[in-house]
Length: 412
Ligand code: 17E
Ligand code: FE2
Image 1: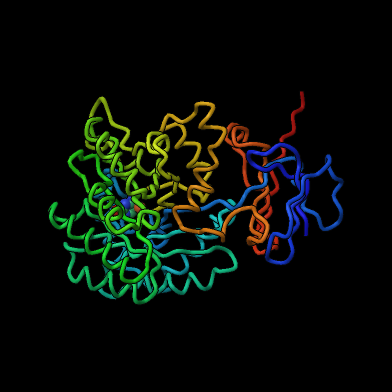
Image 2: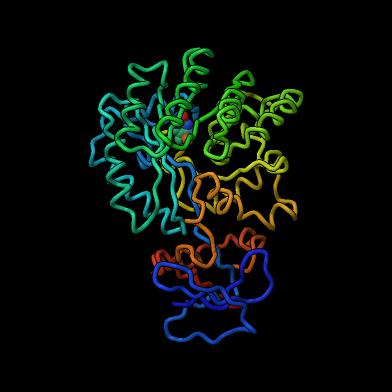
């Protein structure tokens, strides 16, 4: 199968991408537009990119908003309370059904790689065991990475360390954490040291919910970064949210950024989630409660965007469309300048791939898996401006999803 008349990001001209079974066999510059043959996918001079990535979502909690009650304050903390009540009602099948339904929503928007946090502060590890099965059962749709996520803490939850260790033994790919939610600063520091040890010992990646609070005194990012630096694990470590950085003063950030560059860890920002959950204890002026995305990017650090939630105790909306997050994030983070906008798809593609350590499993290059998208616009800028969409998603050389754009008729 061939994809023809494709524009590639950062390149002039039109390309033909030859797919041979599950691999990309060739990427050839065309002399001009081609007329499609029977089996061709015609990109119609629009962008062809590698698949979108969801680097941060909680598939165990999706589609539970309002069960058993709504988060009325809109805070992270009430969300955690609501989830604790809902978590007590979950079953193996409940987790699997909702996770698969949500994954379908992601697939419909061109996502083929997903990292999900799964709450392991549960003596039975119900959600984790269910998600390990889901990971196998959805392989034809997405590559799923499972994070052992201690929602109620490692040091502050009964047998927290044991549950984390068991989750890794059962098959989690990534070790998580939540140091800002531990009962004391010391517990927070100890939790980071513990989880880094666990990851190093087991070979897991690391993705910590880090400083997800407007409290400018929450400084666990420096602990995580220093641990990553000393162990030489930066590329395998991700700091998610880091919204306290939006409240740190510039003098502290100046010093912090030096460490971040030395550690070279990855960052995930969930801008729609954070703009909703944070700033809740402020009156006016009101903080944005989002990390310094543009500044991290300018400093040469790797940042990507995630959805975090779809209809759960923390966030009532969401439809699987990561481009909605990208559009909102570019606004919220002051990234609508020409240079940012024209490479904005990095934030939901290659940057996310680096966060997930996908390596040669990702990218439009000869020899790599035949996974790609045909988008509805010719470049990044036009994708954002027109609120473009993924029109075709190809996985393993086969069409996984095809979207027909809405037709508008005007009569005058
Ligand atoms: N749990 C958490 O601690 N933070 C979040 N943003 C979500 C769950 C969605
Ligand atoms: Fe999260």
